[in-house]
Image (cartoon, rainbow, N blue to C red):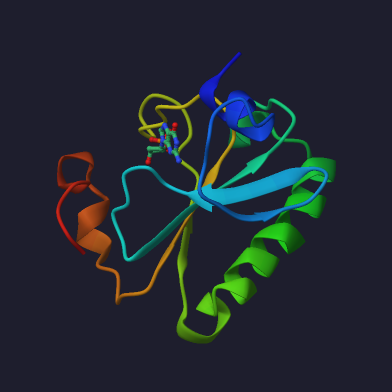
Length: 118
Ligand code: DGP
């Protein structure tokens, strides 16, 4: 079972922000922005490329709800899905990075820059 499946099942701890029957949002263990949340479906889906439109139709309002709970709908945010090897995806379970809390710089998207402060 993958790490995020274990988090979804409560077998690994996480700092949870929001949860419903199908989705979960929790703080990234290695934040690269003042607010860095990971949003996952509880069902195992490998990545965005293999996500169904039905899943995304339900996931979109959940992501919007998370942004609203954190007031990021007011200040703005960046939503990222790393997909596959060249996309820099390390955990093979669909997840969106919700980044905010600062004026984010586009240049920091390069992999070598991921640990620099934004
Ligand atoms: P990606 O490169 O898109 O696959 O990003 C995976 C992210 O998951 C990365 O920013 C670190 C985070 N991460 C990895 N393992 C854990 C964990 O056990 N708990 C939490 N909260 N985040 C994790």
